[in-house]
Image (cartoon, rainbow, N blue to C red):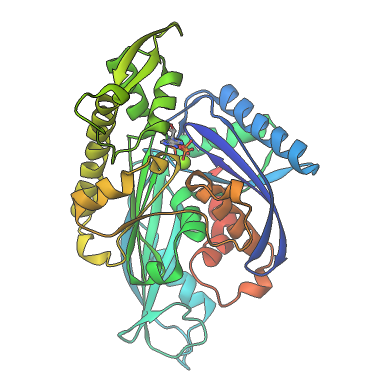
Length: 405
Ligand SMILES: Nc1ncnc2c1ncn2[C@@H]1O[C@H](COP(=O)(O)OP(=O)(O)OP(=O)(O)O)[C@@H](O)[C@H]1O
Ligand SMILES: [Mg+2]
């Protein structure tokens, strides 16, 4: 299987073979600079297609396997979630809940009025309630007279999804599924106990930050903030009058826990190049750390505001898991923890046993999660009793066809 993560900063492509259910062997990952993508959305179809093709070509060279299709993970500032709760009366005289009853309650839960430019791209079944008893993950075959469904729907700009599809068709890539990134990230990065207890997953990318909350094993809500690691880089470049490349290097070498060694401040100075690439100036490491910390604090404030606005601060006893390339900044978790007063950890794609060290990076969470989901998708008979994403995949074909008719 192949998964692609269409990021604003880099496009990642990964390939794996399925060894057994829930066990994949990652054969390779390629990561190339993204083109034509801003804040998760395609702004130039040709350039985005070229970026995808380059990532796939690199993966083909790495693995020696030809690629024809992929599951695509995406995000973007047009994405958001809505929660809905509906009730139907069970239709069969024996009160055994049939697939039709389940379809009816789901269909009714998905009947949400949306602006004409928005569409539902994903449906997550959080739980069913039968005759008042909650926590049911699969209602078919159970007995009851009243069936309720609680779902979370992922809503996106229809144009954003269609542009993604068009980019893929430019390179003749068969799109095997399009999944909102947090639903992939969680598969690779979050522990099942965290997802059960309640946890916030914060994916800090280049141009966006996906803030998603999981509870009782499934997605409760998510929002995409128009901010990311590139904003820190740009701020550094502007204030220090240097190039973006130089600023990115400075950022990646920085440690937010840095404090000057002595009063003389000598070892505090670092050489930086100007915008033209000429070496000539020195800046203090402390200044660099202060600029980055100010931006990270702003990110932490926005994440906190988002969690508070969604009214979920009390629902994340497992704390916050930071992931995405931007979360690799040394000292970021400490700063978040200090500001939010909640346990914060760095999330790696640890749910794949035996993953090679070079692929164990926060920025690969979504693409590896894509492989985990794709593996489940190709073995549907083995996942009958699985919930959440697998059932999402079962229906994916239908919404997907509707979307691109
Ligand atoms: N060691 C590091 N320290 C700090 N930042 C880093 C480090 N490595 C990568 N980054 C930053 O991570 C960001 C890219 O992360 P990632 O690859 O997850 O983004 P993306 O998925 O392409 O973007 P998005 O999710 O916003 O669409 C860049 O801003 C990059 O500077
Ligand atoms: Mg990303």
